[in-house]
Length: 547
Image (cartoon, rainbow, N blue to C red; front, top):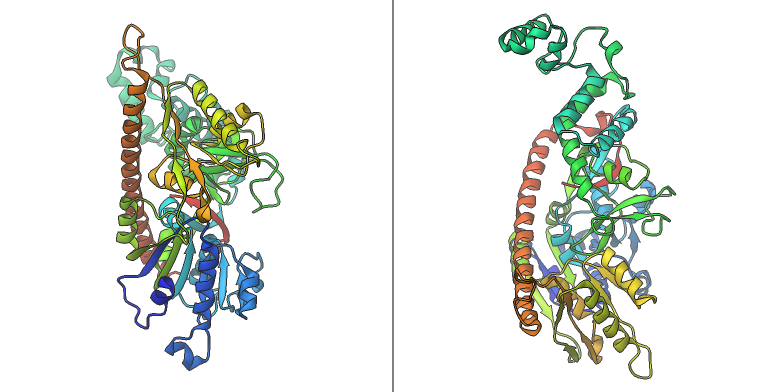
């Protein structure tokens, strides 16, 4: 009712812009938000009565189609690849699906004038799992891209860089090797081979170097400008001449990303989908590198690292390399949601006070928490901290067996770990199928609340425990600096302090990301106002990328 009251206000004020509500896990959250969507679709504002039309609402979630049908509310999803089907879908009272589908059609309408949404306005949106949309992936950007002519010719260039960074070569040496093959290039020291005494006469060497530049034999960076320069190159790369300037501009960024890719960890930063079980967005049967969001534990199946970074983990994991493309038009998750006049959001955990304050400042929303229908009978056991990974695994094993096999019935258990890699480690140690669900997430206050909230639903008698490990520091003689019991207590507090500090850093990074995205979108709007993108030869293949 709070959401509904907020939604049916006759006046649309800028502040507050919407309402975010916390509904505990197991309290029929999906049913509540579907009911609000149905009630709003059946309710007519005075402006809607004039046209005898029901209100229309966008619902960023999965749908409960049968429920809408019972109340005779037209509902459709916008996930079809065919524009004709999506045009018909947007004529419905309620349209639901993932956020990226709404963003795609918004960009196609605004910049390519496809008119997919018809007369549908940007008045109302309901967001399920709103904390994820606004905090965890609020800085994700969807863009419609266009391909670069001949970019597939640079695959050998990517392979060359990836090979060279694994060799004992300096960064500048790698750049010189690339430029020599592409342009034909020399350095000042190469002049020593022309005339030996130049090595002992730097001034003469510089004079010769400047003379070659004046005669347009080379440029200031040593690239050979004479017509037959191709004859002295190695021809390692198979490229087209118009790509030379593209490689020149992006060389430093590509090298930075290649070195960064060396630090990316499989089953932590990304996963390799060998059998296409994790993604259904493409019919390609080749293994795919999928980004793993460590804050939420989810696979970003539609996302790619930008600036060519995604190509290097693909080379590292021997997967098919996707071609690099350029942004044509784009919109961030946060900017798209903020474009709505009214926002209603629901989540099982809205987060800490700092996170709520951040969302309130950025999205101008009120916050409410709906109490549980039954008293919560949940017991949080004392936290256990272990100093070795082996003892930690033993403790997890013992707690699992104690929970699953206690009593007459076999119970289920959810085990939350920091990463997919640790989930796999626990799985192997248990030597049994993980019960119900297993997830990999970073440990934060919101994740802790989310994990414990899954237990003890609807007044059921349940329990939870934090089982942690971190190496115990010994003194110079190899003896523990504290008794283990004393160390456990102090370590728990220090780990929570570290967690809170990391949360502060994450929110600070979000602030910076949001400001950066806002500046980019402002500049792009100024640029795009006089441009009709229908007249520009740009494709419109939708891709996601982090900025």
